[in-house]
Length: 180
Image 1: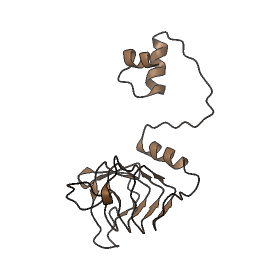
Image 2 (image 1 turned 180 degrees about the horizontal axis):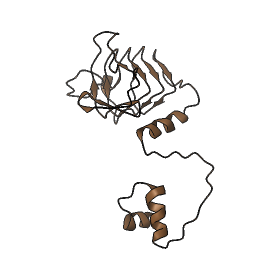
Image 3 (image 1 turned 90 degrees about the vertical axis):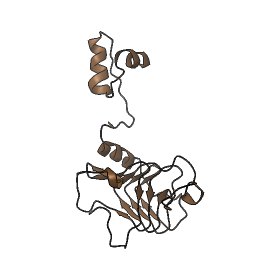
Image 4 (image 1 turned 180 degrees about the vertical axis):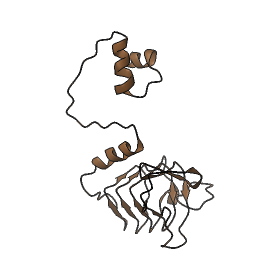
């Protein structure tokens, strides 16, 4: 398989539509194998989100802070502030540990992770993102597509994606919704 991919299909990124038909066209012997395990095509953000949500079967009890986490995949080295509510989301965590969530020389003053009192629903928070205090990341109007990279996020398939290392400032008040 490695030889097939590196020599014949170095730019392929889909097994079903590129590699298998290509191998057949090269005259290679291709066989089917019944796989009874879990498989999900990861061709879109929505598929990635669905696959992560399917891995969740019970409430995560690993967090001792006063936050509520339901139906959420929480990545390594994730800092979650008190009174935060995170629902049906994927939080990818941080590449490294930070003293009090702030790396040396960080100008924003907002720690890596989820700020206290923030509410996140049906979102993917990429690595090293900084979500301030009392920020609400909720797609309440069910917007399907939106590119707000300059503001630190996109919306794809109705799922809010906070991009890697984005900084989402503190909300001015609890009424201030980030996505409306």
